[in-house]
Image 1 (cartoon, rainbow, N blue to C red):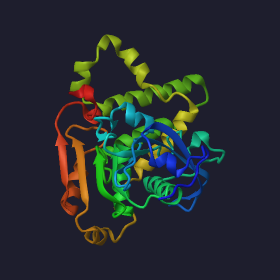
Image 2: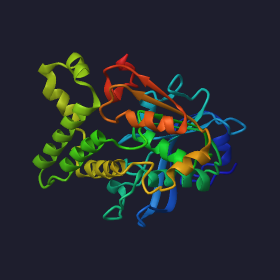
Image 3: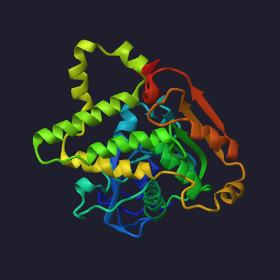
Image 4: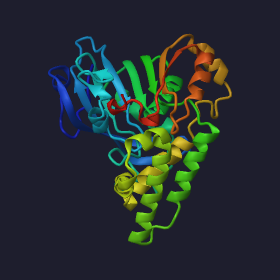
Length: 325
């Protein structure tokens, strides 16, 4: 197994020895060709590594980031780490920042204007290029992703079904439902509003925070856990997307998520599923998730033959978080 040196001039020895504790790496991919025929110039992916690589390289887990999330956030939210959802005492994790998150190539950090429109499949293609052409990785133990990371996990399954032994989408979906599209359109309509003044930016941030609050948790959870007297403080904390850069990045990933459907432009979809045989897939969903509807996971599970674990509770899309239990 060989590794192409990055800007930080790492060597294979650096990777094959010692524990990794979240060091940030940058891979310059050159051009990233997109589904629509466009190209991201000077395309780069950034990622963090955690854990210790096994001598036989058999413990590598890829974790793509969620919507507007970061590789670091996967660690701080306990999705990875000692005793995390992916235990880094056992596995070597490559936590990759997905295109559009503001750390890898994104509208906010690219000289390419306008930034090309990309899809979930394009995010996966860039990650595959990173692994195969820059890290020399030919196989993964697993792909594990939450939320939009789950969308990417399903696309990894469709695009490269033999590249990983296991696929674990957590609160993801193989395709959008009507309600998912409704939520996404609400976000898009807000982001299309003018940004011609600080007040306009603040209004957009507040509106997005309001929509997020209504879909991230259930009414029961919010009414129990939040104080009406502190509503304005809570909303201020939700209104995180308050700059043009943050809004452009969010808009790019919203558009990518809105087109997500593993059946799209695949007339041979059923034949492709049959050719897969019985891949190892485990989907984890949350019964009252109002951000990503869990039902398509169950439909797809019946088609392909895999298990769906549905977890009850009123915490909604934040069901994986420790504070919900």
